[in-house]
Image (spheres, rainbow, N blue to C red):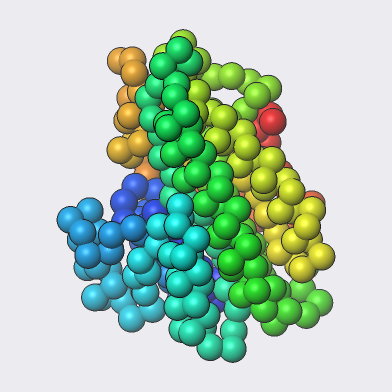
Length: 262
């Protein structure tokens, strides 16, 4: 993480699991971001208590109400973040919020597919559109700098389950809507990387590993438990983020920095 110096970061789904772990690790950096925007649907709810505790201890943490399936909520969040940042831009957008519904192929429904796709794919699309002006501003604030997560970047939290080239654990967990949404997210990331490259914004899809979270445990329909702790996953991902450069934009990488097959 030595090479990662982030002025500001926004993490969606920040009230628990990987999102909360990311917030904690950013705060624990030798030089923490000046602003850590921790976004979740219900900031005052039961599941956001630890996030609120962090915000009470750290003046640079701003808890943002945000529903990534609601364009009005996204627009309001972008306005709130822009106001806090003043004239500076947003360095790093981490689209971490996601969901899974445990349907097999024969049980998949229009409602389930739409709900999962809206959260996992359309949400990051809308977030990228809404926050692009702030990301561009961050990139423009570092003239001459190479593309990196310390300049301006969008990180889309994908999953190995979205790999078409390697359909892993299908017998254990078909989770068709989830797999399709993450495969689509990977394509979105590629499209964002091509379009936003001219703005100096790096875009990467990141597989966090199979992690011991509420969602990770839901994906487990067999006797196996997820092998990674949140701490291990987040440490690995931040190490990867610190090493990303222009050559990596539009790629699909694991928490260990390995290329994941499309």
